[in-house]
Amino acid sequence: FGSSQHRVAAAGVMAVAREVQPIPPVRLRAKVVHGFGRGSKTLGFPTANLGIRWDAVRAPCVEMPVPTDEERAVLNFATTHASGIYCAFGCVEGLPNGGVHMVAMSMGWNPTFADVIAKAIEPWILHDFPEDFYGHHLRLTVVAYVRPELKFGDLEELRREIAADGVFVRTALASPVLSPFAADAFLVQGVTVVSPSVSREDIAKEDEHKAVTYVSSDLATALRQLPPVSPGATRLLLVRHGETDANEKGFLCGGSLDSLLTPFGRAQAVQLGGELQGLLEGANVDLVASSPLSRAVASADAIAARFPGVPRATFEELREMAYGKLEGSRIADVRSEMSEVSQRWRRGETSLRVGGDGGESPAGVAGRVLGKVREVLRGREGRTVLLVCHSWVNKALIASVMPGMGLARMQEVPQRNCAVNVLDFRSTVGSGDLEFRVWGIDLTSAIPEGRL
Image (tube, rainbow, N blue to C red; front, side, top):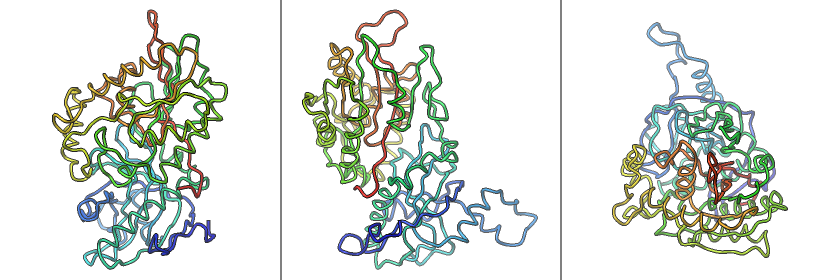
């Protein structure tokens, strides 16, 4: 990693030299506390702030509780490691299907601001959460150092460099050297999975039909272990599109708005297409279809390129949930309104539209999507259909057909960019049989190093 090809310098793209310098993994666990409030409010980047027991540096005091081993580990990191930006993987404990996510982490004095009196550890989890998680514990596996702290001339320059840090860290963590740490046992232990048939090890227990459901697992591993399509069934590979500009910048982009894939998102789709080409050899792929929105079309086209001769189609019914008046809003600006809507959905109000009359409800989305999916899959027994859709579309479909779940729990379905979900469909079912059998949820493949 020390070679210059891994260094991004000021040549018109980034004003700061960045280099991936792997370190022995450092595992930290601490409570997320309130900081200065600058992450989201001032800068537009929702960073967490880890509690640090600075009192433990002083001589022991009767009034002070003895620091735990975890508190000592956090303090030791803050006092012995260089200030700067780090690459990490992390998970928030206690969130339904929270998962393990990439993290760009700042540790130091924040020299651009003059009011900092102590070092801070501020992880920026590169994932959109529907609500704050203050008070929850965050687990981090820190795996590489990127650059030292710098004092920037103004907030705009700081914002630009933080965004550049995020892009650089995403690419670094997707490399073959660092990506395996996403499966670190320390992190997996902290993941809470509450969907039916799902265990802490990301593999479901066998249900009454002796089926295994793989969740947030490696795509290749899961597909190789699944049984072939059974007679009378059609296999559905339900894919979410690659990363978009709106995903990266934190904007709501539903069915009434479009957003292009980022370079990283295009790489995700190309990589997925290549992996599926090998994994689905002999699987009789019969159709590659998508929503008409460009982010889904571009992702599906990249995959379809690996399956020449297979019909390609778009279906209006697969478009993403519309956000109504909230369409295009910064997630940070409408967090409270989205949180209220999501809570009401969890309480069972699944006919509630998001964003008023112009928006859609989970029930509405599930109705149009399921109707179209059934229509597409009928008559294709023994074959495989690949549909590229969107986060809410996939969540609503899976929650609707998974036994014991239902739409009120659709937010528990993890769905990363370019994730693949595997379901088998039977148009004719007998007593005790399921119309849909869910084999895999949120299965992903790694992006090779150096590809954006």
